[in-house]
Length: 233
Ligand SMILES: [Zn+2]
Image 1 (cartoon, rainbow, N blue to C red):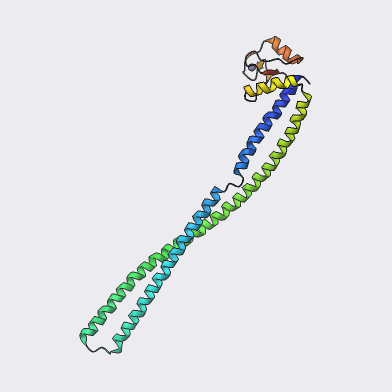
Image 2: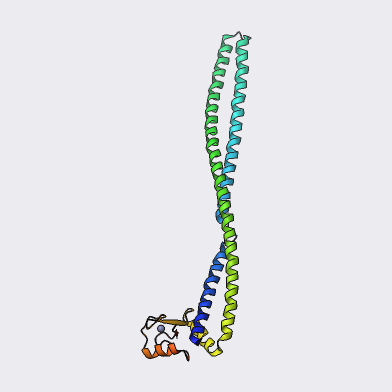
């Protein structure tokens, strides 16, 4: 194997490690991240509290209507017992009963409005409850998938690192030094393939002599334009 081919293979491995490590970093930041889940949960909690508040209002209103009903029954009993003989007192009592009934009608209307609101909110709570169920299930599946991907990627990176060590072991230190320096300077692309007479790093057409020397592979040939090590299949 020529030195350029060795370095090209090393570069493939290095680039692969870089990509996979980057993916791993992104993946790790997603693991355990539950913002969406928390916001759906919070929305359900808020809806439940609101419903509980409305149900309390409903009970209070029901008691109010009930109380008025009892009061009316009591006053009406007085009226029909016939214990009141004074016409003025009778009129007053009738008037009072009318007022109580009017109040009861008003309170019954309020109660009805609250009951309708309770109904709407019960539906809302049910909806948010099933939304949470779905979100939880999706989140769980997502986390499991991420976790599996993490394990796979970690294994890949470990394997690639072994391969890198083995490749570096087979390469002379002078070539490695050139490679590392170029890798730093050229954003990871130290070795460029020669395709149809062009350097793949900078796309320039290479002199035939450079192509021949690169093909021969006796020593490292660099692109006269971008300075990358040239590699020919
Ligand atoms: Zn070039």
